[in-house]
Image (cartoon, rainbow, N blue to C red; front, top):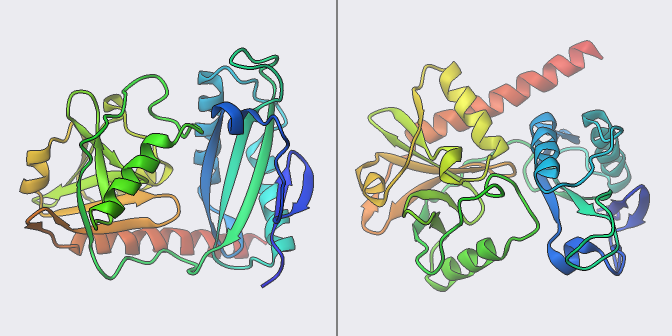
Length: 291
């Protein structure tokens, strides 16, 4: 495998040793945002939706988003790293947006810097997990439903503690609830449940992450005649569901095999994963025709 590279605010560096400057505000204070982007055929996918969430997130936390930070700007930077790192098929990328150096809790500036890192991924297209995940509900902490809840900020300790608790319990993941006990997401994914052929997912107003894959699955389901409702989901809804699956930008769809003593199927999750791959396969075929 070729050596991997990162882009630290325009400087291309080998991905080894120190690549982030001392005083980085995301490192010191969690003062930043990030996006995890899947790569297929050596190209980032769904980048426009990631970009839109990054723009809105920057506005929300009062960072100045430069006019030259366009979708094309980030795509060009990612493609450059893919070429240099020898990633021609599957990969994953993380775009970080950090408030510029200076200050303590009061920043000296609201200007920003960016950091892009890229890694190979074992599959080119999305692959459904062969064994269903075992899940439960995280009880030790609630996620606050506030103006930051829908964005991927650098303050990820809640998700880290959730993932550690899942591992300690011998589970694959745990579900988070808000202060009202509404289930909103897992440690790293959005949540969908299926009852009688209808898809249900927590609404953004309940405080879940505004996931880019969540958005795409909703659109794909609707385009294939599957009804989708955004609504509050309670623990009893999990027990009444026929299927449960999780979504994130890197894995696509991950089906859940069990919640406590309840077992689930994966027939609709499998169909949606197939529709998802078809969508991107058609996308790349169209790019080739246009080239």
